[in-house]
Image (cartoon, rainbow, N blue to C red):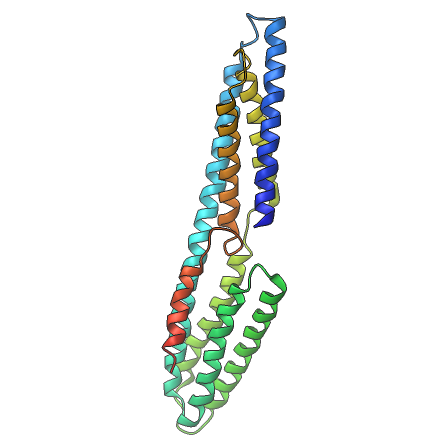
Length: 254
């Protein structure tokens, strides 16, 4: 995902700059006051780094939880569609064929909706097609239930309703993310931490290039993974493997 890479790259560059600025500020202060330059700084450093760690843990845990939830919803949708499809066997035989054909098209559309990401326009068009098929299936099932010899609506409509509801639940879960201010605060805390880390390394005669690069790279990498978890299917982290349950269901629809 280009935005995540850009965000992580800018954060890494900003942290490198803050580390250097902090080191120069620290060196200037040490030159003016060699004895008192470090007085009281440990408490502030500890508070800031502790808050940064808490914020990273909070955002990472939330992103991982939402990722697992979205992946579980794929299995739940496959179960809901499979149950509704089996209930079609209770309908009059003349209604089963056309409805089963629409169910197969519906599963194809549901798979295509998420596979077309990150093309938002194409995914939205496919989602609209899925919604249209939902309406057609519901209308045809209700019509079939009015025919002679049809089962009780209680045997057919609840699974169909679950199938429609889970599609909406997946859409809401896909669009659920933390407020942007959380990521802005995470970046601000990382930059402040870089400033303080650079100040703490000012006592050395030269720059510790290894520590500077590792610190900025680890922070930027962690933030990138958090963003990738928040927006699966758009970056390196994918939930495509969970789609196999829908693929298997589609293969079994005869």
